[in-house]
Length: 439
Image 1 (cartoon, one colour):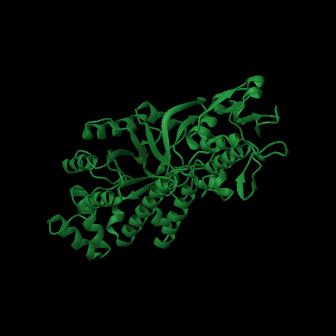
Image 2 (cartoon, rainbow, N blue to C red):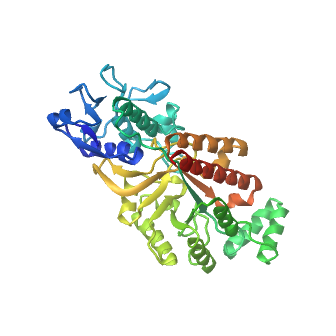
Image 3 (cartoon, one colour):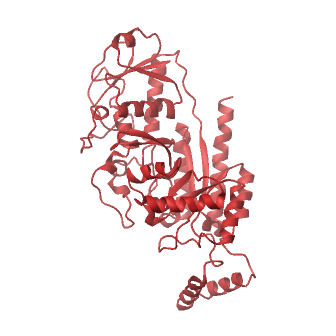
């Protein structure tokens, strides 16, 4: 059993120890504040303190962050060690790492910087350019996981009897039904507007396609659900579907949640995967809207809805995550940026939300989503595929979880559809490798 010495076990410290050792490394541990008990422990041990109290241990020199309750502008002191980004560094030669891994991990995973004043982007979201990871060039790396495995190697070197944990890659495929149908069932006003818009632009191809769909001469381009199900079967992947349940807005374009065709489609998809709520753009910081939209989906599915994401990743901490906890959401898939690729919380491992203001951990499990769903608005197809491969490679190296959020309308594009299949195939290969490595 791994023993950790910590002079004062605060909620912050307990949370981040659990994150590093239990959640990421998957190993059991105990915490003590008794120096004699720690010194007499015969197994592997980690000392988290201002100074090293015994020789036979891994020593991590502590900063004050985990022993405080305030939220302040902090002096981070960014640097690199052996090519790995780090901050909260020190010059203590007794330490086994040149920085406080626990304080740095807490700063990132708690989204400490989002509790400080910041500017929003044009959609009212926390902008990636505000973040330390973006400005220091390590947004594309799950640094907390990298740090955790580096610490594991240190422990294993010092205490060979300690069994090194095993890395296991995991993959979750999700598809956002942002607009369930392109032409059908969108209502008379939106259909009339669509015709006028296409005619004004002299877009006769769309006029013809819209007409053929409305007269049942061809399928609606977005009605590709059987294709998605077939791909899930082919690659042995369970797919998680997202559906809006709000009224139409300039940012939320789905058809009415009352439409029987949409309701039947969602029930059908729930037979082959999971269906979660895509919370509307205007639901951010609005508990009533979040509760109403979630209840609408629960009424369609005839069961509680426990999975969510915020449309455009428009949410604000800690309020929106506290709201999700109140309405019974257990898993959220919004922890990413809508306009940047990378690990917003510094990790690729699902983690429980910690509110710095409330100084407590919540039951809400947060899934990092490193690649935005509008990836093809940011990059060419070839560039986007490279981003997917680089991201999956980074996650594979630390045995994390890759969550892909894909727009259903992308399946109408042959190139995008091909990229989706390549992602499924690559992730299946990585999962198959888990079994080969750990036989």
